[in-house]
Every structure is written in C-alpha cells, then in structure tokens.
Image 1 (cartoon, rainbow, N blue to C red):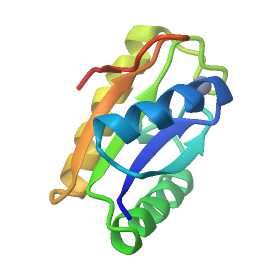
Image 2: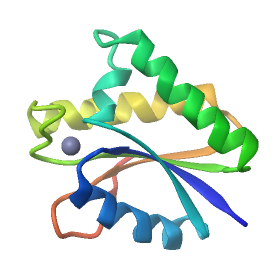
Image 3: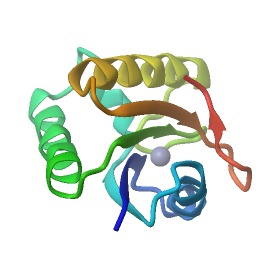
Length: 124
Ligand SMILES: [Zn+2]
C-alpha cells in the first residue's frame, strides 16, 4: 500500500479534484486527507498555533504510520475559509510549502493551486 498526504481545503469541490490528481501525480494508491477551511492561512504567523499543531499531528500519522513520502499543500480561489485575494493565498501557499519542506526534510512537499473544474497546477 502506498500513501501520500494532502493538506487540503474542506471544500468538497476541491477534494474531488485533488484526490484522483494526486493518486496519479504521486503514484500513490491512497491519499490521506487533512482538511481545514483554507489551511494555508494556518501557516501564517498570525493564525492559531493550536490549529497548526493539530495539522502537524495528522501529518505525523500519515508520514510515520502510513509511510507517506509526499505531501501536497493545496489552495484555491474563492475560498470561504480563507477569503483573501488570490495573490495573498498564493503567498501563504509558498510559505506553507517552505515551512513543511523544512519540518519534513525527508519528504517531498509541493504546493498546488486549484481552479474550479481544472487540473490542479503545481505552484511551488
Ligand atoms: Zn476553501
């Protein structure tokens, strides 16, 4: 069994796009989904450290117990959980990806931008 990890918005539309995409992109049988409303905002220094800890605890389970070696961080336009400009979200996506690369040096981490009804695009 092979797993990868998605840090994704709770938005159901985005999950439907992300899961099959990552199965192919990361050649993984299963996608562990860590969902929050607009999770990239959590990696900004102004947001809730308890939420960040909760996300990291779930990544640890995916990496240490399921052997995931690839993490996707996802963001999308018109996010109800993170109602800021696309450019702000993209900066947060970059920051989240850089943070996770540093936290999990043995794991591949990539950031994806996901427009509605489109193939997710690797952003960073
Ligand atoms: Zn969202």
